[in-house]
Length: 294
Image (cartoon, rainbow, N blue to C red):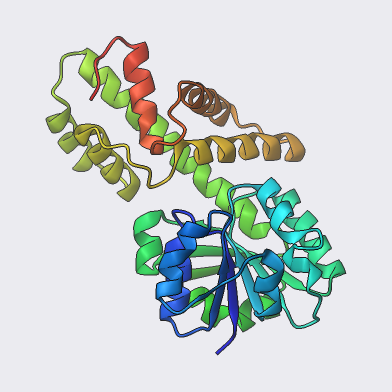
């Protein structure tokens, strides 16, 4: 079995790394908050003190981090994992960053003798725990094929999309739909409530209509229950929508709806909702509309 390293053990990374361990791969992990590594130790993983130690003990290093600044911090410098040079090592970055950032990181990896795949995921904490994520991959096709076994331990749907940056671009396109659906659902529910409708039957109407999706179905539940425990933190969606806007500027793509959605998530984060689930945009719109929420 390949020796695998995993850096970044947050809401998504922790259960993803656990599935690597359960898949029988010898695993070494690192997280800046060392307490988050303890559940992995219980599954037999070795807990490293530095990112460089992860690379020294691994053939494949996976990162699942919040943004490109965290990636740079973990990868670069004398304690970064790219300091361990070896022609056969592979870096799989599963973070959501810009395509240009993936290409930047790939250039640094290649200069250190590594291969790299960008492989962000679709699905939140539930599919991460179940090993049923969708994984969108960019990079060299032969490297992707060689890492199917590792990727399959975390995801049930693997998509090869093209050269470096293709996976991250696909993830931004997908999350554009997620953000827009969440924003429209929140507006619909606030409009219904302001008009005097009970939101439980209104939710049933939406759930049984042709516009429902698995996402909308879950987020109706969040709104009805007043439960905003983060499956996908609002601050991360805010970051992702900003990356979509930047990508639109770079490629000359008109994204008028996404621009409005970005303003909504910016306002929600400024209101202190960043650590809650992205469904908390409902709370912002309800407050602006004079409704009392849970």
